[in-house]
Length: 230
Image (cartoon, rainbow, N blue to C red):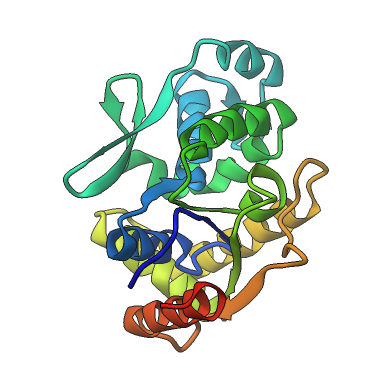
């Protein structure tokens, strides 16, 4: 299938499978995959490790804002796909912990943090042929993206997926804690002042509650064909 050098923006709620779908697209069509959520999680992990988070939710915004001027968070691409680094450390595993998940939304609502992450993403996306997932990709980071997708799924299904992912990574969590965390993050991100989570006017909704990865791939192929042909 011949796919032009377009930008595909995937937004949606927590644990709808945005990253998995984006990686699938990147592999199928030889696109560069970028996970914006990983960048926000990496900033959060850095803030927690640096003592900038107290009471599990209060952020020392002045210190964090100053640190962002020299903070080196980036992607490295190689075998196994894209990996997130803070300096020389790969942080793929610790950024997915329930502790980071519980703090990432209060960190991600900060305008200075969003500006920091947006700058990184825009730089990576300049060459095109990129698939990127997050919560404001089609509305803020790449408002002119060629294809915009907004992903949704049933709350219980989302929580089951997240719990399975965490257990596979050797992390302890229970269903109720996970589902409450998902709902809390969605509320915070949907009501923040800077770049709130919302469906772009020209986005196509994908409800994957009952879809397999294979179903999703057929769905995106049909969408691409409808716009660009074979």
